[in-house]
Amino acid sequence: MTDNESAASTRVAVITGGASGIGLAAARRLGEGGHPVALLDRQGDLAQKAADELREIGITALAAEVDVTDRGAVDKALDQVRRELGPVRIMVTSAGIESTAPFADITLDDWDRVLAVNLTGTFHCVQSAVPDMKEAGWGRIVTISSSSAQSGAPDRAHYVASKGGVIALTKALSFELAPLGITANTIPPSIIDTPMAREGAKHDAMIDLDALASMTPVRRIGTPDDVAAATAFLCSDAAGFITGQVIGVNGGWYL
Image 1 (cartoon, rainbow, N blue to C red):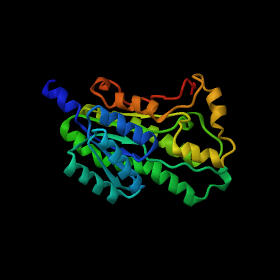
Image 2 (cartoon, one colour):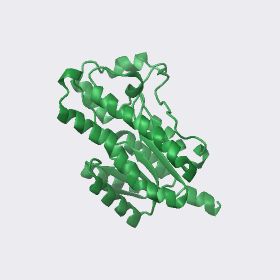
Image 3 (cartoon, rainbow, N blue to C red):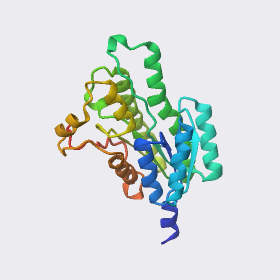
């Protein structure tokens, strides 16, 4: 292995929402590729448990309890990552919340809360990490958006708007950062079997995971590992000519 190959496999990756679901799967996949990983999540105990489990299989991992709406907390967590693991070269923004309500019933507090986590939280995390990438002349940004931002969805105007903003933000970043060796892409998954999806199905009669599986061209709903595989590729040197793209991981849905 050359020095360049060794460096490529040990770039520090930060994953928000890393305690479970898509974020944890992405952290595991990147860690298995040799990258030290930092799991940022507002559920600190769960993030610590996930990091401990990753270390048990030989992955260098740390956990930090972070609310991505709090810029000071984000900056503090990334400073910890730099001290303990090194400069940030990969940022995967998977932290997000979902909320359902008819448009007429969405309160301003609900609107602000969803936008703050899903869109502004993405802004905070990426902006805090980009200086490290600029210094290196290399970086990878992968945002997790949603296929609902492409298709629309009933009773989720605030969620759809927030994820549409993530797609637009990612495209803007790709233009601005590409000359600096930094790529930015977004993955808008369709229905993925995550704790958040399972919880949503308990409270929303419109979410029937089995029915959605039968309607999906590949005849199953997605898994966090499906999204993690695409994420890991987009974070690799092999994806250096791919930026500003919306990479659907959706089992064949045409959106």
